[in-house]
Structure formats: C-alpha cells, structure tokens
Image (tube, rainbow over all chains, first blue to last red; front, side):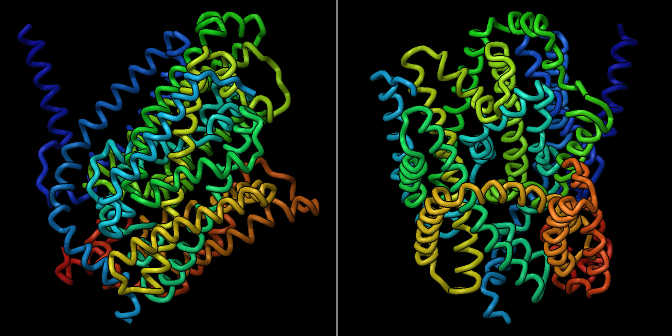
Length: 113
Length: 521
C-alpha cells in the first residue's frame, strides 16, 4: 500500500514537474510547452465531444467511452492552460490603458501623418 | 402550413417582448461611448460572449445545412460541421494575440500589424469588404427566415425577411453591442433547450435509439451511424483525402486570423471579453457548445431518415430537422419551437447588424472621415450605420437571391487562397502588407481560372473541392511569397511596438531583438 502511494506521489511529482502551474507574469508572456500541449489536446477534445455525444445519444457503448474521453481531455486542457492564462491576464490588465491610448492615436491617422 | 394554438402565440409574443425589452434595459450603457456601443466596454466575463458565439452561429439556415449533410452522409456529415474547430487552436493562439492588440475589428488590426500606405490600403479594403459582407449575410439569412415563414404560415418571402429584422433593429439601434450580447445570452439558452427537446422528441417518434438502429439495420443503412465510414482514399463521396484536408484547414486555421468567415464575428466577442483568459474561454466554450449542438441535430436527422428514407430532392431533405420538430411536437410546444427558431434568427441578425456597423463607424467614419469625433457623435454614427445595413439587407435579400448563391461559392473559394496568408501574417514577421494585398488579388484571379474558366475550356478537369483548395493555396503562394520578399519589410519600430503589445507566436526573433533594444520589453 505504502509502495503504491509512493508511486502515486512520484507520478504526481513527475506530472507537476513537467506541467508548470505556478506562473510569474513575465514567464507567462512567453510561448511555452503548456501552450503547445493545449494546442494539441484542444482539437482532440472537440472531436471526441462531438462524435461521443452523437453516438451516446444512440446509446452505443463506444459513444459513452468517446464522450468520457472528451470530458477528460477538456479537464486536462483547462488544468494545463488555466494558471498560465490567469497570469497573462493579470499582467496585461496593467498595460492595457497605455496600449489603448496608442490605439486611439492610430485611429487619428490624419493628425499623425 | 402549421396550425398555431393560443398557447403557441402566447409563447411567441412573450419571447418577442423579452427580446425588445433588452434594448430598453441596456440603452443607457450602449450610448456611453464607442467602446460600449461596439464592445460592451471590454468588460464581459467569458460566459456572456461565449453564449453569443454559440447563438450567432446557430442561424435559421444552419439546421437546413446540417440536415443536408447528415441526411446525405449520415454521421460522417458531422465532419462538415467540424470547420468551426478552428477555435480549438485559435482560443489559445490568435484570440490571445488579437485580444492583446485591442483592435476593434480585423481591419483595425491590419493597421497595428502593418504600417504606411500598405496598411491604410488594407484597412480601407477590409472595412469596405467587412461592411458589404455583413450586409450580404443579413440579406441571405433574412431570406432563409422568409422561406421558413412561407413554409409555416404561407406568407410572402419578403414578410419574413423584413418584420423579424425590424424587431431586432429596435434593440440593436438602442443598446448596440450591449443589446446584442445580452439578448444573445437569453436566445442561446432558449435555442439550446428547444434544439435538445425537439431532437430527443424526434428520436422518440422514430422508435428511440434502439428502434432507429434496428430500422437502419433492416434497411442495410447501418453505415449511417459510423462517423468514419470512408469511401476510399481518393474515391467516392467521402474520401479520406477530403477528411484530412478538412481537418488540416479547420484545425491549423486557428493559428491565423480570418482563416474562417466566422473569425470576424468572433473577433468582436474576443475584444468584448474583460481579460485575455475570458477571451480564450469565450470562443472555446462557445464553439464546444456549437459542435455538441450539431450532435443533437445529427441524431434527430438520422431519425428523420428512418421515418422518411431516400428523399432525393435536396430542397426537401434540407428541411429534415424542421420537419421532424414541427410535424411531431404536441400542440402548445410548436409556438415554443418557433420562439427558439426566432431566437437563433435574432441572434444572427443582431450580430451582423452591429458588426457591420463597427467597420462603417470605427474603420471608415472614425478613421478616415472624422478622426476627432466625440463619443456622442460616434454612437450616433453607429446607429446610422446600423440603419443603413438594415435597409441594404432588405434590398439585397429581395432582389439578389441568385447572385447570393454565386457569392457564397466565391467566398469559399476566396477563402482557399487566403488561408495561408491569414496564418503567415500572424506567425511571420517578414510577411508584409504588399504580400497580403497581392494574395487577395492573386487569389481572386486564380479562383476564377481554376474553378470556372480552365475547366470550361477543357484545359484542366473539374477538381473536387479539396483539390481546389490545395491548388489555390499553392498558386497564390507563387505570387505573394516573391512579392513579400521583393518588397521592403514593415517598419521595424512599428513592428517592435506591435510585438511588445501582442507577443505573437512564431518567427519574430529580429523584431524581438529590436523591441529589446528600444526598451519596450
């Protein structure tokens, strides 16, 4: 039992180590492997949710399995990317005002020419 | 013709009052500024624009189109609807980049990404094209409602085109985008409930899940419930080559901006979200809901096939979902179903009225005509633009139905050659405005050649649509890649500012170095 728990701990540590979930804003601004994992999982989640639901409505076993996989992938996707998106959003909120001012200047293009 | 009971009319009238009430409630918020009238002040939590994404992409003609592909191809037809999966990647790539740019529209984004004369030409072209495109969609979707009203009540087509759009105009004119998204939120919930209920009811009428499978088995049509029933690699009506091309276009298109016609409506939802995270989730969940909605429709249409097999007339089997719903729901529920259909129609019309007005107001009026306009003037200009689009859509819808068919085809074809440039402008710093402009022009010419002119003279055979895509993509690249490399790159200072603002993905090393040198990052 203890060996199993230790194994689970190592597994968790491995996953936790591979997927970064504690982001500083300047780190989150860069494109990292977490983004690429989201990019890979996301279309698979869509496909399995769509096909899985249709087949589940026909009460087919393969449908329930596919739908279950879709829900699992959706959960993993959010687990991987959400901490990063939160950090990006917090950092960007601070800069937004400055960028909006620049945007308004660009709108008045005649004046700047 | 469908008979309406008193309860049916009550459902419908209550719903119409609820929708127009939205305009009155959010009138004060909508008139505060241009940002409020077009983006709800950029302060929405993800689930409001997310529901709007779903509601907007559930139009009156959508069940007809889905019915057409599912009735013909069985559950394989679900892959035709998978085009909206561009949001799978876009939610985490281009939506993030676009939200950080803060541009109101795709046309405005062009002047942030590019600089100088090329950027201005692109912005002018895209704003004009965006205004026209929205008017075209309004006329087209409006006519679909006209035909539905003709089927239900025997009214002339123009009645269904004009009356619902006028009701929508009440809340779009008064509250702008605030009215659009808040009404969309209610419309999305109502429409989702109606779709699920009617589809499950239809399945029940056909004998339930097991009954449908048994009947398909007896008919020798069990392949219809296999989403991967391919007809060969290159041959037949559902080849693997088509499937792979579709997955390639849909999924990788998420790296770009404008790779799907739906991008332009989504862009407004992305900008109206309060943070980058909200923007990502709004389009991810809105699309997830859209795709799973298709699953409900699909099984209901399979049920319709069991009840009405082997209809060969496309215009008849395209009504499959409407028919299974209207012909079998009990009295009192038909009005509720119609309220749901009105909901999906309203959400599409309201979106395109407001979105078209963004291009006319922000990109044409504010940018070129009156750069120093006050917020009050801009909101007024927004309302006038909305009105112009409305009138234009009536004229368009009633008089140009045949041309519309050509335009739908032309839009698809134009999308083929522009698919890669729309990605390159996001991921490659060296791609410039002249390359992008030349891609538009070259694609237009090659589309006519490959699709119509050369096959009609027997110079090349008529190609299946997936081969047309690859041909147009390669031919157009032969023009815009040399044009890009033979013209100057965009101004480095301008690019560095864009880089610091949006942090784009891909090949941006020289620009990153410049941004660091200028102390921007």
